[in-house]
Length: 155
Image: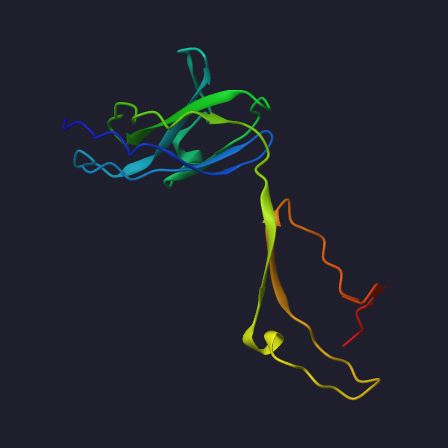
């Protein structure tokens, strides 16, 4: 049996107060047998005990997984193990340590070119104002003219 290379080092792509979302690279060599899935393990720091996050490789068929049930403000590392029909890889290099806490991203608004130019409409007519709003947690959006709140119209 040809050994399966370990997967790539997991990278954190999202964090909440109890979850961490990870991605990693496929093993370079699968040992001649198709990869059927991955096992993901976590290690609460400080410590060296790795705990399995999923019970079966079929639950993680691709190179991404969201670990749930983590302790808020605790620090963890994660690693992935590839499983083929006949073999199992050594664990990947551990992820960089990560603290489980809600990620805060300041609000940001992207206005289209049309929105940045002067918009003229007749009094009493409806106008469509569009903007892409980003942030974490997602900001609430309110349109105002001066200090007056503008209510959205139907249609």
